Image (cartoon, rainbow, N blue to C red):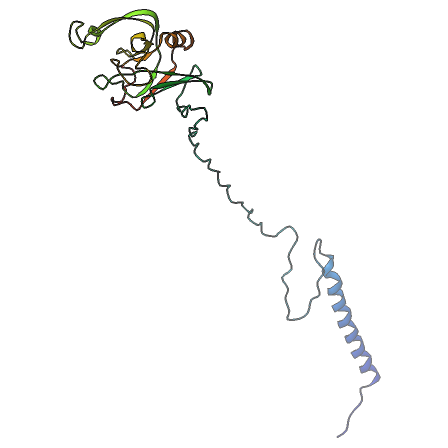
Length: 236
C-alpha cells in the first residue's frame, strides 16, 4: 500500500489549527475567573459542579433552647412541738400577738406559761368538774376585773337553785363570753393541782390570779387540753 506524506503546506495548516484550538481553550479558562466574586473552577467536558455563590446560602433556623422547668418549692412543714427537760410539756403551736402562750393540761392539773418561746411559770389549777367540764380548745383572754361577782343567773341557772351561785371573786380574767374565767379561788386551793371542782372556770390561788391579772395582756391564747368536756367554739 502506498502512503503519501502531507506536503509542507499541509503540515503548516494543521499546526495552525492545533495552535488555535489550544489558544481558544486557554482563553476560556482565563476568562472564567474574571467573573466578579466567582470561585475559580476547572471546567472539564461532561462534568458539572455545584459551586455555592457567597451570600446566597439558605438561612438556617435559629436553635431554640428548651424552656427551663420552674423549681417547685416544697410546702412548709409545721414546726414540731418539742418537749422540755424542765417538766414543761411542748409549747402549743398557736398564733399569738402578745408573745404569751398558756396551756392548761387536765391530767396534770397545771397551767404552763411561755413568753416569746421561753418557759416562764407553771401553777396548779382546778378546772370544771365532770358535771360542768371546761371545754377543750384555744381561748383568747379578754377584759380583766380586779374583783367581781360571778352569778349563775347570767347563763340561765337561778342563784337559788341547787346548781346556782353568786360568788365574789378577785383577779378575774375573762376567757370566753359565756362566762369562763381564770381567777383567784382561795376556797379551792386544796383541790388545785389535784382535782376539778369548778363550774367551768380555771381556779388558781390568789397570788397566781394576781400574777395573771398583772402580767398577761388581752388576746393571749390559753389552750385547754384533756378535759371530759366538748370542744370550745371560738367566740362563744
